[in-house]
Length: 67
Image (cartoon, rainbow, N blue to C red):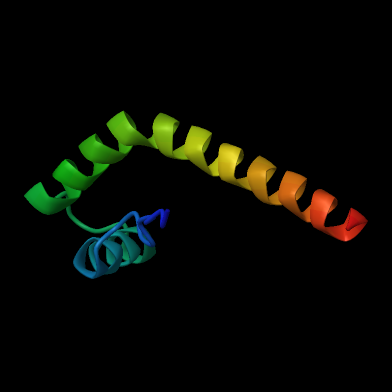
């Protein structure tokens, strides 16, 4: 069974807008406000998922080295 994972959290446009805002401390456009709102809502789950994936890889690697 093949498992598909998302490879990105942000779209290319969201990434560009976020980088620009952080770099220049730009104006709070509607796009930035929406992105920040989504980040505040979703970031806890994203962090939990990332921690789980890191533990998965670490456990997998430790078992592969034993074989």
